[in-house]
Amino acid sequence: MPIQRKSRKAPRDESGRLRIGDNWNAITIIALSQNNPLKAIAEFVENSIDARAKAISIIRGKAKGQNYLKIIDDGQGVPLDEKGTPNFKYVATHICDSIKKKLKEEGAMGIQGEFGIGLLSFWTVGETLSLSCCGHDGSAYHMRMSRGQPGYSISHRHLLVPFPGTELVITSLLPGLRQVNGEKIQRYLASELRDRIRQTEVKIKVIDHFSRAEYWVEPRQFSGQLIHQLPASSTPHGEIYSELYFNSPDQENRIGLYRSGTRVLPSLTQLDEFNSPPWTSGYLQGIIDAPFLNLTPGTRDGIIRDERFAQFCEAVRSLQDKLIAVIEEQRRAQEERSSKQILKTVQMALKEAILSLPQEEYDWFEVHTSKTLAHPLAEGPLETSFSGREDELMIMQTDYGREATPVQKDFFEFSGPLHSVKISPTSCQVAVNGTRNLRAVCRDRQRRMVEQQISFQWEILEGRGTLNPIDGCVVTFQASDEPGLTRLRVKVRQNDIECRAEGQITVTESILPENFLTTDASQKGLPGYTLKSAAGENWRSRYDIDQNVVIIT
Image 1 (cartoon, rainbow, N blue to C red):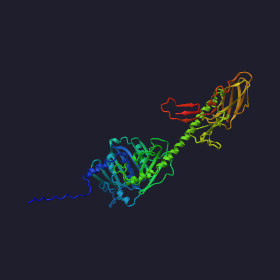
Image 2: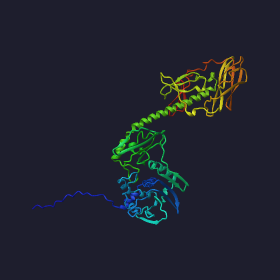
Image 3: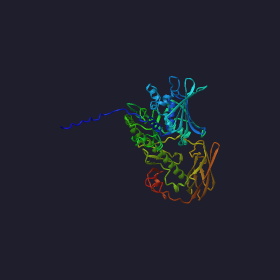
Image 4: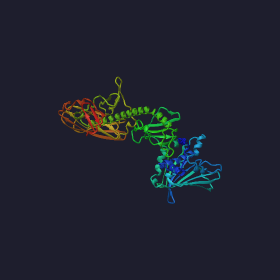
């Protein structure tokens, strides 16, 4: 007979629910998951803001040989139980089941907390936490927890005058927090809670007994030019708020990522999805606020890459083209303004030197002619003109077929009181019986031209020759028929201010021909300038004779 074998039944599929194997171990992991003690302090302050506090004091000091951190607010305190006492028992026994979450589900607005683990972050700050609040009976109730201990205790004492709000005290601060002073707390909260402070108008003061200083936490102000008319960014889960500023390029310029007014990341570029231009350009600073993002509960400085995050990335990318265009436009405008200012500075420096030197020897730039200069960064040619008056030298922007117009002066370019005068040229040569025009150049303390309420008096101190007229800004010197040296002086008066300057003229039998020192460059007028990248070269600037351009590296 064949032997019959018993058939084995296949194991059935099983399913079940996840459970915490060791509750205390899970609580320990949660309590130690906060990696930034300043972030923990910000969470304590946010608890006060969620409780509708209008004034918050953060005190850092030392008592009975122990360093402590104290946070006092005037808010609504811990919600009361049916007995009218602060419901500390619920707070201690419902970790990860926040009262605030239930309040938000009931329609409460302006509340940030939702995880029920914020108080546990005191483990990264100090050894002991004490939370105090008053009940309806006027007594003060205290809840005490210790780092690394699973228990908690609640006590109370009667008070003559109940105090409003909540008092949180962390004692025996960890040794690594000695450098977390009041100023660092103030700077961190100013950025971390920027929009929460602005929206709630809460007043936060940091008192540091160690440095004997007080700091008010003011919402961080961004510098630069606010970018208007940014395209709207929205997702099915909510709107994205953007406040961006254009600034000079700097590695410190960052765009922070916020959620409901609280900073999540100091820089958007910490996300791989945004580690590219324009976010990495260094021109932008500001905030992008997405209230619908899901955060990592422990640290609250990470983002869960779920569907909401994917929609956030897609919506924010719509800003890229606009921001790239804004950066390019502003960069060009800044370069043009800088180029014009440098050109003006170079021209004025050259002109200043030339006006003090004899024309027949040094006037190789032909400053007394009117020429058109091609400027490499301007939209049209730049016209530079000078006709014997120093203040007539100005940069003019023009297009072909249109009359040139001078650049408008800034308010600081208008002159002040008379401060100095000089004769232009200070030294020169004139042939016997020849003539030469001289001019008195008047300036204020900032070396701007002075022309208002000025009187002149010219005189010859030594030598032969005549001056005509003797009371004008420009005077004509008539040389005698004999060679010699003539010294002259001009007195300039503006109200009660008087300045003097001297010059000398050498009268000679003959003068070198006008084209003796002339080169092709002398017919090109004052030179323009251009910027050139010349890494490794041993020169900082040089003059290109053929192009009549000063090249600057």
